[in-house]
Image (cartoon, rainbow, N blue to C red):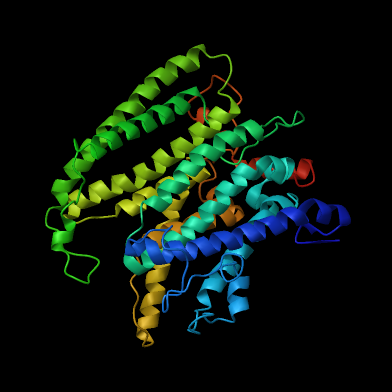
Length: 450
């Protein structure tokens, strides 16, 4: 028996049910932590101390009773055990929602058959081949990423700021987990294409990414040691008490500081391109899977940050006011670190349409008498990332219809040490969507993941 590509046979239940329960419990625990992050981080509070407690009487929540995700709120019946103050059900709903989200991600990536016409193409055959035991680093990376998108969206919507610690944590997590995934995954000998969750890179682009990241490290060192001043350091002097945003008169001046910060990164990228071209000429094999995984993740981070940072600098110089926040730079950077170099480009161009849709909805709501709610750009980027991740069949088919002559990069590792730079980024002459269509006809639903 199967439903929506999900098999409920005895073997399938035995294979997937334990991991599905684990995913649900992990999601509930992450949801509990997100409740702390969303409340404390914007207020400048520590995430570790004090322990979870009642905000009214200060009574601590016991770990194995009141502080259990979902169950704790039910055990307390929505009230503090000491002062009987009411506890908002939002906490339990966030935990339940995140648990269901993690469970859904497990089902979509591992339990749904890749032959399913919709959900099977969201993830692709690579996940079906590897299963959770070999693909857990990639799944954890994706799951934590989606959870972080939720936290950043809520905080940004409330405060118009994104705590940099959240996207930086996801970025570092991606840099660690993707190489581990490269060491764990197996390559089927019966396939011509070595599938991968994100586009692979050749030696040139791998070295561009690595030396670009080295440049980021140099720039951060100069910033932390005071050799470069933080931009907008005196922004708070121009914000009235109780306000989030203010009119800052020196925005163009601050862009000079940010351009200085970017100089080591540009130098690193340039050096990587020069060395990469030489290595590509003499190499007899492509980078190892773990190195391609790391290089693809770092390249995605650089592309994501570069897109928003470029708009930020040009827009600020043109209009004389801060065009986009640094939180948006780090947000699209972490999207690229998790999803590879090409997806942040899609996210960047889809997000404005989501912003336009929100503007129309807000306008209609205000016309009906509701209070108009302004929304920063971060939530639009986050929603666009979710669409690219979970509605990939629509995104890929839309690309194929709008730009039929422009191939999309394959989500596969590079297998040729030589070749053009486009091929070194996984761009083939035949689009991934078309290739998947042909392969599905030939192999009863085979799809390389779009």
